[in-house]
Amino acid sequence: MARGARLTLVILVAWMPLRALGAQDSAMEVPVAIQVPLFLKVLTFDRRLDARAGHDLVIAIVYQKGNRASTVARDDALRALGGAHQVAGLTVRTYTIDLDRESLPAVLEERPAHVLYVTPLRGINILDVADAARAAHATTITGMPEYIDLGLAVGVRLLGDRPKLMLNLTASRLEGADFSSELLRLAQVSR
Image (cartoon, rainbow, N blue to C red; front, top):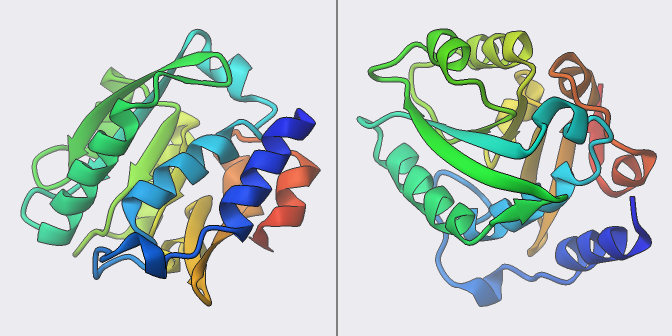
């Protein structure tokens, strides 16, 4: 990890007070517009990202059309990712997966993704999402802090008025990621 990239992540996490950013979605502590740049920077700490992704970094947004908080997060994520043309030299491509209509394992088999952005979900077993991600070797990211304890890999929560990265080390490794020790020092790590 280049020193400049680490410094950028530290600045994003340490100096980004959220109260100045306006309203946030009630289902998540940190607004999606803040989460996405943070998560994209986190992905640069994955030493296996290039080997897993090739030329394109495919990010699938997992949501439920019948869940307002989920569709709002999907829309916000699509907007935020629209400006992300490259991450670590990889071209970013996105698509959505509606869990109200589609089977996550089936979609991931047909259209592989390297990263799953998991929105607020209702009536969905998060461990099933984690299992599908692990089978597909897709790194999970989410703005729902409680999903990290339920088996997803990377999250963000609010600590005071600043975002704090969360990392489930076991989940990230089972999904195929290999995050550098620099990220481990910056995040709240669980095993």
